[in-house]
Length: 140
Image (cartoon, rainbow, N blue to C red; front, side, top):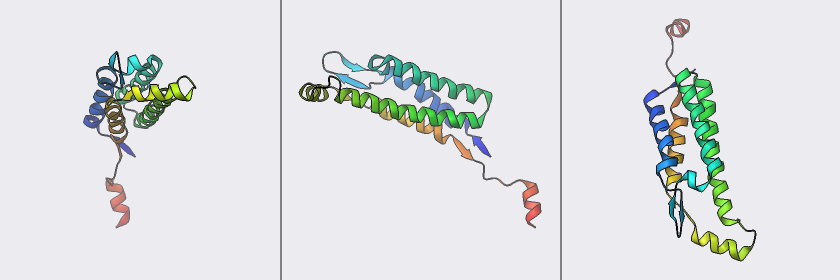
């Protein structure tokens, strides 16, 4: 049986909700720092959709669904990071131009905070190790 540590889950939801909007995810030379919405709109909306499913499972108190949604959210964050990374390094399909582009665009620290929020969501569910009174009576 799994239990949900609610303060930890709320911390993960709070971090995961604020990171894509306010933190820098990509440094563009002329424009400055971009958040996740400016980096890729579809990635932004799917990220918030999966986070909304986690919040829904949290408020419905369905721990199994919450675990599934938090695993999907972490997987989506990894896929999103890899998509942005490979898009930077292979945008035009020409080696010289892609090399110049990859040297000018830089990934920022917002990704680390997003991963931290998704890991907090994932680790907010723990296995219940308490034994019930009936189990103690059967062992004696």
